[in-house]
Image (cartoon, rainbow, N blue to C red; front, side, top):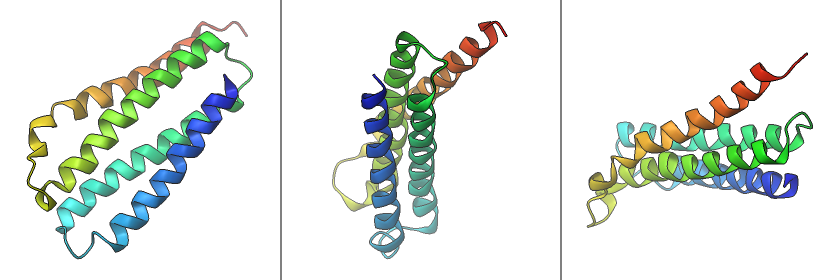
Length: 128
């Protein structure tokens, strides 16, 4: 389980850096300041959760069932939250109207909140 979590953390971290560089260099001439800021928000949250998964994979105080639950919630959350933000921020660059998928952004955010909540609840229940 830890190998899968750490691999996912590495993938999310790597792609966050790639997307951040892409936004800072390739998109700066074609997107507005607001669109770039929105894109950057997606990158930041993806990186935050790459680091979160790194912590999860290296933590020996959590059992595999808890880790799997947090991993699934985080993967789905990042895909829906950051992924939809990337598409919405770059909506002006294509002919498909990605605004119709805007409702998935808060769903992704909720999944990320749930992932952190599962972690918090586990530690609150844990006996000292």
